[in-house]
Image 1 (cartoon, rainbow, N blue to C red):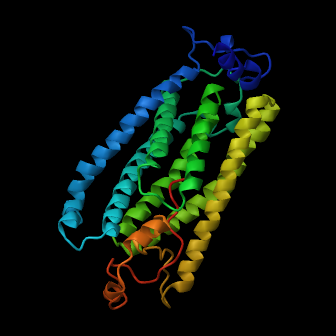
Image 2: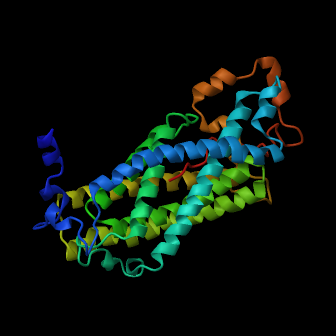
Length: 352
């Protein structure tokens, strides 16, 4: 076992040339990131998952009762269908994620605006890897890692969605990036990556909440804002600001080493995911516009049956008998879910 650990934590892989783990031991003068710091994220991830359950069952249940869509109401009615329960579960999940993303993004902005590397990315590499770990960076990293671990856990307990595999890959890549950048003290650039990604996530969760609440105009507006912010930040700011500093500025100031290549490979993988999601967002917007009513711009006709985000097997199980299908048709252009009847096959993008 000791041999395996020694091989895994090989200094020649993790650290730049002529740097050892002994050089990065904590002292009275400075504190550096230690791998064992990340162990705290596992129990904290479990706590976040439990907090989410409490948040959903108590806090959000109270608010949904005021909106007359409580779970009890669905269960009491004999004609209640699984799609309605799925709708409520999705609403809970969106509100929980919106709350967290809003908090962590606000924290990241307040913290980063006081740092020099926000304004000059070369500061991420000056005196690297002997950059001391601050309390703010440590808190930021542990909280983000814990949240992504809880998302990874919840993938197996939440409603199974069509994007399960790609979102699972996203979470694994995000967790790997957080761990890699913390262990080899690339925490400064790591904070930039995390804050940049949290910005758009706030808007997409808000748009989904508006959609489930049937506030279509607000949903369209939020989705348009999300699409603009997502594409500009992930396809513009990310490669120009983040990849430029990790690939070129770090090469010039520090030079490459084995874990440097792995770290940048993960960042490039993330960029490929950004491109794929941007394509889906543009496709969704174009399809919505092409199917919208004349004289009306409806950028997000994704308010289809909530099971659009669920595996097709669930749809087959819940299909109503032929005698009931006639009653679920639209009335005056509006279906039973209160949507506008313009349905597309593209679901909401999930959190990124």
